Length: 345
Image (cartoon, rainbow, N blue to C red; front, side, top):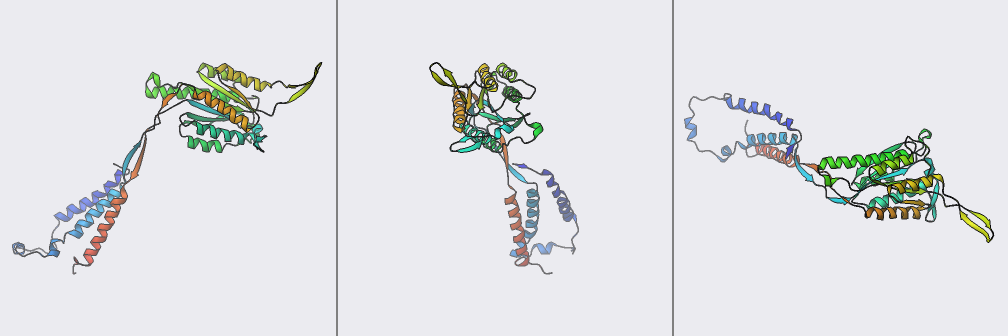
């Protein structure tokens, strides 16, 4: 038990001074001889005449103790889990407002991405997961945590960047930020546990974007090189329109040929390749869902780290029973003084 406001006990000091003065004070009606009174039998009312005074002092002490707010300390220990550290990097540039197939409907790329990301987080209960978004600038929206319920709310609230001066696509900067977050998180975990076998064994970045890197300080391959240097696996998903085809005339007749992938798609594929990750292209919600499922199965095969959440302390207030007891004693005192122990005058 602890007292949230221990300074409230100082209120007992003036009460103690009053009690000492009352004990040392003179009687209102002095008598020269009191021995005869000792031989007189005491009535029941006289025997219990001290109760009102006792009830008053006890109730005051209880109320002061209640004001100090006694609390019971309860500890919640995190459940050890084995997982990996993951940074979700999501494009929120204006191009993500374009429509793409979602079943029989047309939904923005952002809404489709949010839908499949929430499903992915739900499938990974044992992993440390963080969230980074980017347009022209990269921002950490949610630090890596096992509190996935909170992360789901942040994913749900993602919106397209509407400010023109911050629009753009800088996934090079976003990957560099995610890699730095993973590296720092691993170092903190190691320093805290002070054991070499407690380092984060597997670190992953999952990038969802639909554009070409056109701003930022870090080039995409430069960021991928950082991830590779820090032993981080980078998985990339390009959200694109359905592939276009063109007809080429040949001696054997016209042949449909798929157009060559854009430069951004080739860069994303190369970024995943150099870090040992997976590259996928998605043209609808089904393709995006399958891409994340492939990455999920790949992550599931990686080495896991035993992760334990912090010890959390909660405090339960206990002042209510003391306050109720003080109230009951005051009520009983008032009843006794107005009935059985009533004094006249």
